[in-house]
Length: 141
Picture 1 (cartoon, helix red, strand yellow):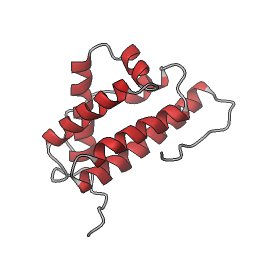
Picture 2 (cartoon, rainbow, N blue to C red):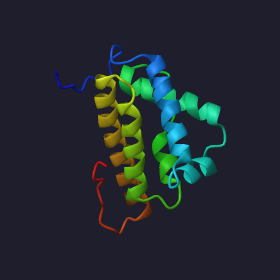
Picture 3 (cartoon, rainbow, N blue to C red):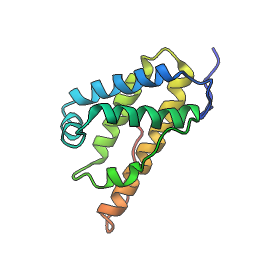
Picture 4 (spheres, rainbow, N blue to C red):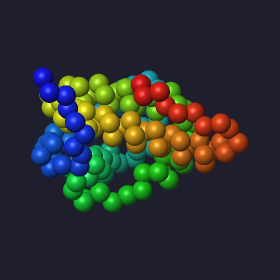
């Protein structure tokens, strides 16, 4: 069997329907998670709008579309009390979700991007919140 390769962004990688299923399935799982659920529930006030934003974000990252408008970094940095364990849990749940999609190229590319994005968000969070502390990188779940 051929190993998946990093292709993103590529319109042939997956369909918009697959991205929508990924986003909805992931957030259904994250909202039930004892550590992540309360954070999402406290900070996402309009789930329908959030789903649209996240579908547009992942469509941009995976398929190269240009529907996403937003600035994820400041929104994440503004959240109180985030930890490396929370970012690691997010990546773990994301990987569980992509593993069920039945599209190995989508899985590989989305997981690669999620690890990169999560790592960047966590590093920036630390730089902004804890400028005097040594930076801690994510393990990669």
